[in-house]
Image 1 (cartoon, one colour):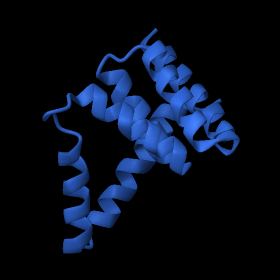
Image 2 (cartoon, rainbow, N blue to C red):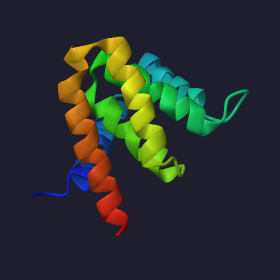
Image 3 (cartoon, rainbow, N blue to C red):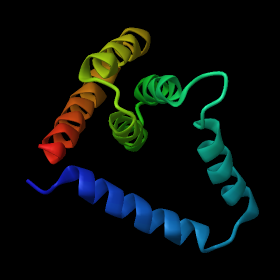
Image 4 (cartoon, rainbow, N blue to C red):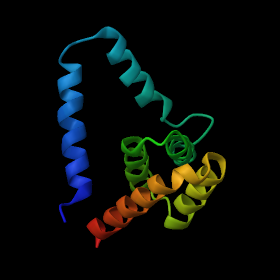
Length: 116
């Protein structure tokens, strides 16, 4: 199986570059707002990443889930913390979130295997 973490990051980087090269002011501002929203403030980065992860799961955005899982992993969140957040997402979002939960587990496992 291809390395799903590297594959995701390469595609995301390539397409973000492609999108930003059009120099659309609105899109650039949205990207900037997104980046700044997840910086430490009254809430720490770990908390914001878990909030982003839950919202992404409820909204069923697999790319967003992967992004927040990877950032959560880099920030040192434990599997237990991430799984608890995904549990809340599944509770709030309902059973339709389960297919995305499967993909989230697969991606988290890939993140953990990369560090081994």
